[in-house]
Length: 161
Image 1 (cartoon, rainbow, N blue to C red):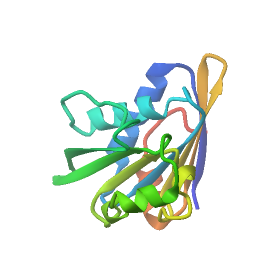
Image 2 (image 1 turned 90 degrees about the horizontal axis):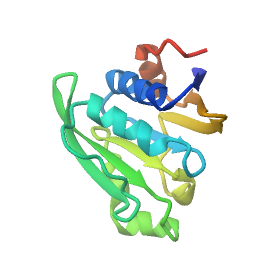
Image 3 (image 1 turned 90 degrees about the vertical axis):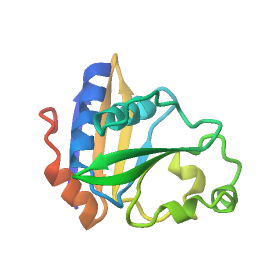
């Protein structure tokens, strides 16, 4: 499967990656974001959502666990559902909340802290690992399905190595 690395010099590069990802998204994708607190997971998702057409405020779902956004993607109206599982106590909470049903092949599901529900989450199409590196971030994008590979093939981001 495809695999890319890049260095994001500052917040503007993180936002630029979010814009590029929004243009490469495909319906039904599951994207898992890995990284420590402050690594830029929410900032990347916020830029992606705005580039996908969401006009309003994008808040971190730290307390609500999930926030859905309706956007147009390749002429289709779809949901991008942003999850933040940091405060989740157990994988069963994910199942009890009914979140597993959102991974239905139509919604784009973006999950921060997927390791908190690893046992019950479906396999991701794309893993994004963000690591603080000086004033910027290192990012690694790993496709783990044909859908993830298609997304990375569509990705136009000049900093990709």
